[in-house]
Image 1 (cartoon, rainbow, N blue to C red):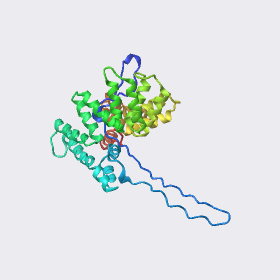
Image 2 (image 1 turned 45 degrees about the vertical axis):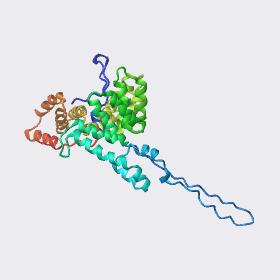
Image 3 (image 1 turned 90 degrees about the horizontal axis):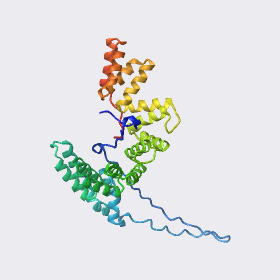
Image 4 (image 1 turned 30 degrees about the vertical axis):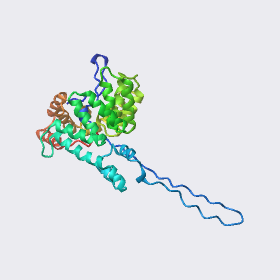
Length: 344
């Protein structure tokens, strides 16, 4: 699939692409509790020794935390973190029982959705499992149920579930809700940017990338290249491959930040090594121009497999300069190549 991520020129028409809902994954928010012990003071007199310090104030009992507050805090957590929270005390274990049950329902929902774990794919059964998990308070299940409704064309139901998750602090729900407002007819840029910004500030790289696209293209907000590159860089450093590719182009063209060929090449290679086919094509061309023919062939071969047909034409030109053994070696490297892990 061709990756279109760079804002187009006027003659190309709009190439604005929102994130694919079908590939969104969960992102946890962790709630931290801190206990602050009261400080003690000592009275010091000139003629007598200091008096003994008073006993410390009670730091608070976590078991007394209201259940409704606890479940809201724990709503975005995954199973390992729920298990850890459940081990704090008996009352927490009892309060979080519905959320632990939702994790089992979430697991079965994913099996039915993707046809894994020995079951046949069944979208209706997947949705039923997700909805049961959502009813028990899990924002992860709310988001997955929303994704199914979106795929089925029932967008109002999807948006309702995204909003529930977003209001409970789920970064993925916030991002999906923001995108829903972008894609609405008519769109609501103000609400879209509000939720995308919340998600981005919570560290969700997809939202960071989406904000960067909006600011770069200036379709729903005023163009701001400086802010766009800031968010591209955050997303790229967080492992988002499309942001790696776009920040490379920004450095190369000097858009929103000083032109820097070295950093442009570095980010282009990172995007290529993480599986971005356009980056593989461009990195392959750069290697070809430097005379690194074997490496160039490997990246061009990967780009062609990723749908970049132009890479195949350049590869054939290089093949004419290589021996059969060298060509086979380069193709074998491509066969054994594995993309580096990336945030999807």
